[in-house]
Amino acid sequence: MKIDKAIVKGSFILLIAFGLFNFLNFVFQATMSRLMTLAEYGTLVVLYNFLYVFGGFSETIQNVLAKYTSKVSDAGKLKNIAKRALDKSIKLSILLFGIFILLAILFSKLFKIHYGLMALTGVFLFIVFYSPIMRGILQGRQKFKSLGVNMFVEAIVKLVLAVVFVYIGWSVFGALIGTLIGMGAAFAVSFFQLNWVFRAEEKKADADNIYQYTGPAVVIMFVILLVYTLDVWIAKIVFPAEVAGVYAISSILAKIIFFGSQPISKAMFPMSAEKKEVKDSERIFFNALGFVGLIVVVSLIFFYFIPEFIVRIFKGEIIEASAQILFYLGIGTSLLSFANLILLYKLSLGKVKRYLYILIPLVLEAFLLYYFSHNLVEFSFAFIASSAVFLWVSISLVGD
Image 1 (cartoon, rainbow, N blue to C red):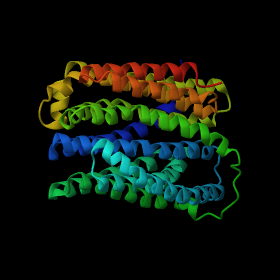
Image 2: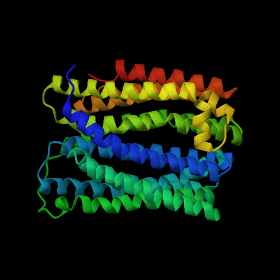
Image 3: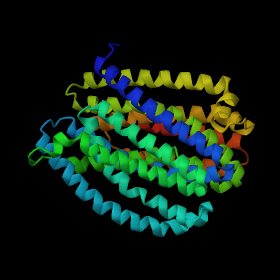
Image 4: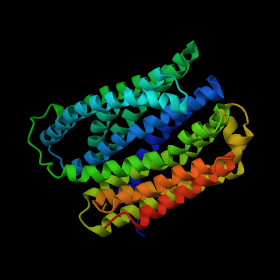
């Protein structure tokens, strides 16, 4: 297989950017886990998983804009696309925030979390609609360095402020407020990074068929995010607070594989979308698949041989129950990482027919996790089984 230099260069830049971003997020999570009790940290992870699901909007918007702006080089047309997207995002975010604060009453009782925390989580809906518009353009135009800087600003501001706020006693509220300010700071910086777009004379851009593509993208991205967050939610429901906190630690560590492979999928997406020849797109995909496989293998080796050491670095102490299931959750997350790459590849080509089939493993996961919840090991194997089904559906059923 011929190595594609573009995917290697793009992946390398984003690997550094995402590596720094994920490292700072790891420090954030590790610090929060040390400053909070297991029960408090379990609550934070549950709320963060709401942010991951909100990220379905963010990922969809970013991927859609990356796909269409990968073929638009005119700054005036890019300005038109950005302004139209921002206008629609403002209206949608207000509507969804209103819906969420009502649903937060139910979520608060279901997860045994203070309503104020749930309502504050809903505020993130505004930023998850706005920020990906700017990042999508940066990604689509392959401005990977600028995209990396933008992510760094978010991570460092979030880390510093959250640590300060939690340290002075604001606990979970402080972590959420620090995160919100960090995301807002990155959004503000993106206007400077795209000043060449917003200073240009606006020109009408042809994006009439963008909505035909958006529907499948929304469903696929939301299901991907739900599949890898549902386990923490159900753990919070079926296990005592302390046990749910133990599971949350392993879950966060296992997701290093998913987040670690994202630079590759982010680099692959616009490159595959802009190619006219199928064989060129396939070459890019198989290169990306090989890189993801390498990340998976290396991660699983560490999870298998030194799980106690990894948990100790993260939490500051060895939690045997977390170490025991880390490798199992790593396997499940690895399967989801491959499924994510495959689905993004099909999205980049527009080959997303029968995409509603991916709802099947989501329902199956909810059933398996709820039914097989007598202990954490059994729960972890249920997660592996549902992840395997999701991968199979992504390969076999979704597409032309």
